[in-house]
Length: 189
Length: 307
Image 1 (cartoon, one colour):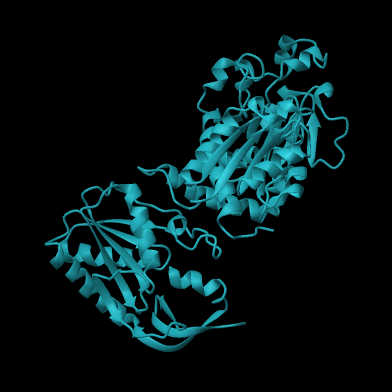
Image 2 (image 1 turned 120 degrees about the vertical axis):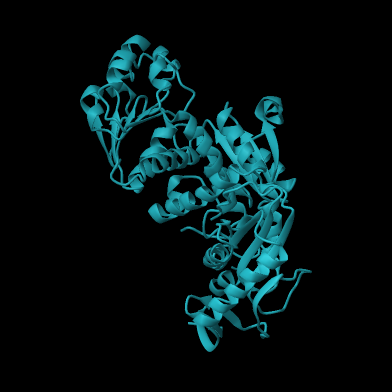
């Protein structure tokens, strides 16, 4: 989500131009499949596991991860979506509006929440997400799954499940889409 | 966006729709176990109400608190206003204490515009004279959108004391901007002297229009209007313009009944009618909190200009 917001707001405003493809569609599928197995292994099954995708990039990934978990374990897991806009620490520094309405279908008290996002960058979106989660109950544990960890953390946050570790420059942009993962940059129109 | 003084400040239909999308998110916030977000931490909002209000002020207060803003109340009754302090001195004094937003209700039309000229803080019009009450129009439109799926193309009858109603003026602006067909229904004495430029139809016959409405919006019949001899008696007003049990039967199944409150049961709305499922008065109040959260967040937090 951080990626998407940065993409459309100054000083990052512009058009995303892909420079290289770093994951193909199949690579994403394989990574999701592996992460699903890791989630089951870490939690000794899926008891109490709730997947929460972060708007906007994490939402389709959470849904696909849930499908994989269902296929492996044979029973569905709860899936929600979270928009962290009102919990961000840069309100007032740049335009911040929610992308979609949050939907957390279950009480999170006692659950194991797996936050799902497309790209982990500064960690500020995750901090905001951790803050937002407290409004929905007290989870037993919160874990973090991301498709791409691109480094440059500004907060003490680390992922539990990673699709791909991707070294980047700060000014580069990572785009996770249906066809794969592209590394590129914003070009001023 | 710096101020919300008129529905027009929202930049037309797209701007109002943006407020509604934001309101959807704040409705969800209101349903959380802890219905509060830190979005406006460190912001201070002052209620400057020169006129009585319970629901509007409480609704704004609840909205501000759910956004984690700090609030201060300026109650005119116990203030220096009684010692003759001018509006300008009052708002400049308040601003000097370090406030980010002043929510103004005043009996004089235009007062919030004056306040906005004098100070740097944001100003929200919570009702000025007979002129405007933009957050009421937003919550009314939002309630229609929630129940009927949208406002565009809906046939809305606004019934009652149009002349003295800021709610009616703001509602006409909002409803017509959103593409509704608005009809004003009132006796001639309760209509403004001129309706030139109002995008509305007018009728004096409530019974004829009832079957052709998607929304019947009843205004409060202010009792003091009787002493001004604008209507013969409240009973006669009810006979001609009250939404009685008999009249409600002429409405389509899905037609909504709305009222800005406080209701005079037995005058503009029959007691039984106010309690029907089609009467969404309580929803209007509930949505009011989320709409005002959206307005305060747009002005003080979002960094977005709708114009």
